[in-house]
View 1 (cartoon, helix red, strand yellow):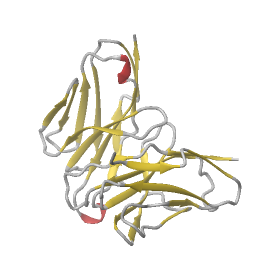
View 2 (cartoon, one colour; view 1 turned 90 degrees about the horizontal axis):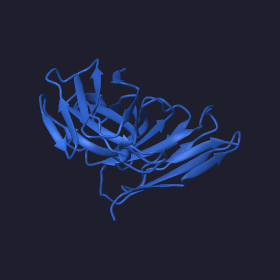
View 3 (tube, chains in turn purple, brown; view 1 turned 45 degrees about the vertical axis):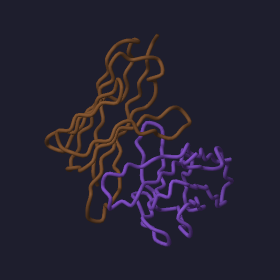
View 4 (cartoon, helix red, strand yellow; view 1 turned 30 degrees about the horizontal axis):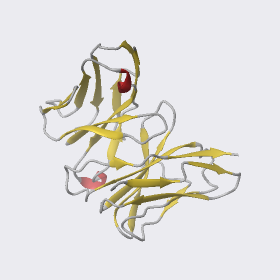
Length: 115
Length: 114
């Protein structure tokens, strides 16, 4: 089945530790996105990538880093600089964003907690 | 930044009732999307709207793209228990540096009592 796979489902981080969240898609989508979701709030954009080897900061990029070495993969690293990392992280993808009528489709998320 | 106000924040209804929720924006959007999120899962696309004034249905769901391009509403008719979840609106600009980026509303939490 085509889709977006996020792993792990649950992740725990120790103080001062970097952790990496995986996002893989087999939809042949060009664009990929990372969002953070906190209780009672909408999704906030962390980083996005329109093509391989290129990515841009979203609204809350501080304390996060990404890479886009392959079209199907867009891992997110939550660094120790992110002081409040506990949240639900969602990855999404879509066809090339210049094709306006292309909605984003989401994975099932990774819940990150602090130990 | 762009602001999307979604209301109501939460709704408690009886099974069989109709539901209405809406989003308003401070900016003009070229696309409106409505998603539903079940607990512990990612949002699933319900309806996509691409033209001002467009009215689109998906089963018991109906959504409209406002004429001003600054608002959208979602109606659910004859609600059932599986309609429970969080509903999000999202708007997108087509150009400039915001290419492809979505702005999300805060969500409407829907509870349906049998």
